[in-house]
Length: 174
Image (tube, rainbow, N blue to C red; front, side):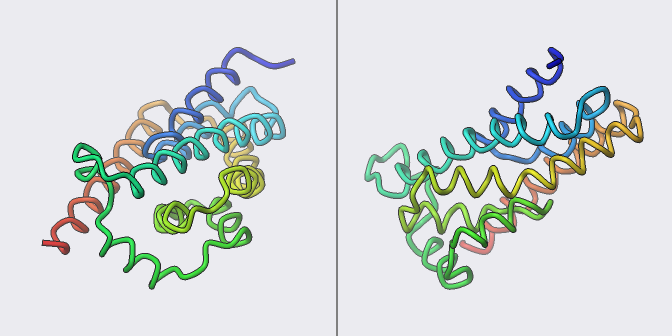
């Protein structure tokens, strides 16, 4: 039986995947209890894969677009070239492995967008990579009921870390 909280989790994972993708871990820990880790991994991974595919499509559009309003949000051509030099392969296996860990996969997303990596293949890689990670986090959330304040604090720290990273990278570009 699928609980309403699992549907909410899927919706939140979809939105997180389509946006900044920093709340995945806290979401899985919070909604992992009371759910089958297998269902969380399958349905949550699918929702994240769809959201991440939409994010990739938006990144591809932003990188290829010449609209003035997207220049502010799109990485500079120089930044894309640096990312391509640092991460020359956005292969399927690299995408799967990146998604199967808590490490940020933003550099690979930029590379995938810059080289016009096929969106369906990207979505499948995200789905496959998320399965073990999501299963583990859902199991942890079931085995250990983390207080909401701990999960909220961890989400805030993840967001703060993401913001610091963004600011630090922009400072290097100037």
